[in-house]
Length: 466
Image 1 (cartoon, rainbow, N blue to C red):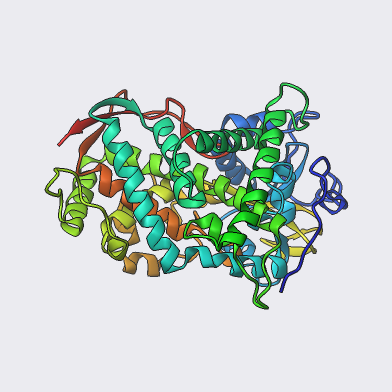
Image 2 (tube, rainbow, N blue to C red):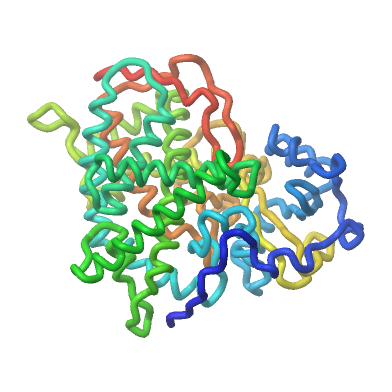
């Protein structure tokens, strides 16, 4: 199936995103609040989104309305709500219309901005990039790049977040695009950074000197670059990097994915991967620095699996075939994703009227689930503010609500690159922990909660050589 839609202008959202949005009277039967005139609760949400959600649930229950960012939204809270929205048995919810108004100007037609048949066809075609052959190639590239950079860090104090963000971008240039680190990779990375920052910029038009203008210019550069590269790689037969896999992806009928769709998917998945992995790797290292007994358990596991250091004194690479053996490391990473989910909430739009929690939700209503709230609810987690990787033993997982832990989403839109994320973080731990002991260098940092969590001080850590 090769369903295609022509590229619409990025200057205006499709009309169906705004037609029929509910007004205050339509949602009068749902509890909640509209906040200040014009701005609603926007600034309250920006200041403390998790605190606000907790207060709203306590006051109004697990279905409530809220006005912010220019319109009404109905929050559906808890694991049952996560299952309703993410599994979406009845095809009630549009991911395209949920994320689109936020992301479409810069990352239009990415996989997360597709629904139903079109989404399923493109997802199936793109999944070739995550088969064992390409994944083994990525593992080699990740070991090579992470080892080189982690050794360069050296012992001493550093800010981990900007360092891992830079490394993740460089790794993406290598394993995603298949180009060497250097000026070309730097320009691509700069364009991505500008696009990501523009996606949450307060000025939403590309006026001169604004972040949105930088983002739109960055997108124009990458569209041109990826378009030329797609044609070249198809002519030359592609390669093992992710972009080459996308460039030669086929639908079930054997037809190639259109070039403009390859470009849009590559843009989106690069963005989705680098910011979320940066956040989740930072949260894991933060929690291991705070819990040295777990840091030591992971260090011992890594050395047992890889064989420790080689004849050159450097940690041995983590082989692709050994990824599954790092069971404690995977549980610790899952617990870090519970503690600080890199996507704290997920928007959708109701395509039809439905009922939930005793309330009728009208067609066209923007709705959202709150992943962070669910991940910290005592209903699903004993002592939720405690770091405890053993929550993710098979028995514990089996006993828990299936949708109480959803850092990668769920249902048809489950993150396509989740196994790549596990692999990158495991290789990072395999290269980092045998080299250094990690401690917090300047106390426990405060975290910026939105749009993707990060420590406000960049996570000041101290690396001590082992």
